[in-house]
Amino acid sequence: MTRHPLLLIAAGGLAREVLAVVRESGHEVLGFLDDRHEELPSTISGARVLGGVDDVTLYPRASLLVCVGSGLGRDRVVARLSALGIESDRFATVIDPSVRNPAGCPIGAGSILLAGVVITTDAVIGEHVVVMPHVTITHDCRIGDFATLAAGVALGGGVRVGRGAFLGMNCSIRQGLTIGIGATVGMGAVVLSDVHPAETWAGIPARRLGVTE
Ligand SMILES: CC(C)(COP(=O)(O)OP(=O)(O)OC[C@H]1O[C@@H](n2cnc3c(N)ncnc32)[C@H](O)[C@@H]1OP(=O)(O)O)[C@@H](O)C(=O)NCCC(=O)NCCS
Image 1 (cartoon, rainbow, N blue to C red):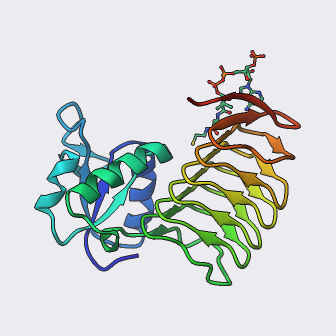
Image 2 (tube, rainbow, N blue to C red):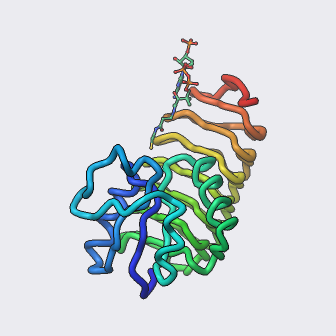
């Protein structure tokens, strides 16, 4: 993971899930930074709420993990951190010990892989990607930066997931397809054709519901 103490940026559900994984490993967590800190309790799940995102500069030796649930939100926060001089080597990667990655597929900085994820072989996981429990990523998949794969997603071989795309719980993507940048796939969808950037698809077989302007 990282040898430095960890700061979790955002204090919502994803951050608490990460906290549980990190604690189990015995790694030190300094606490949360969240812009809503004045409305939040002083501790959450036993970890301190230390301030807002800009207070990151007070912790120059901490490793960082952006735990905003939406990929777009993570992208915005990482851009803010970058403007504050934070470079990519400051970001930790959190991988639950139950994740299977026997071929050692690369996983980018800032990414979070929760329990039971399986990566078979020759896949590449980008930066600040969130992969929730029991996702299956098979051979030759490419997961773009800031993508989010909700629990139970299954990707056939060679699937491309664009930057910031969101794949809802238990959707299945046929092998060889591309899910475009910023696209959304609804929970339970069975996707049989490419999804263009920013489009939302759902259903069995999946159909286009709309497009984000
Ligand atoms: C697809 C999704 C993004 C659409 O959300 P939305 O834009 O708010 O859409 P609405 O709920 O207004 O539904 C619009 C229509 O799509 C249908 N619909 C919504 N989600 C659907 C889904 N997953 N499968 C099939 N149909 C769906 C609705 O029934 C509705 O149909 P209607 O117009 O005939 O009444 C959302 O329903 C979804 O599946 N999100 C993923 C949830 C998830 O995985 N959460 C995990 C959190 S970690």
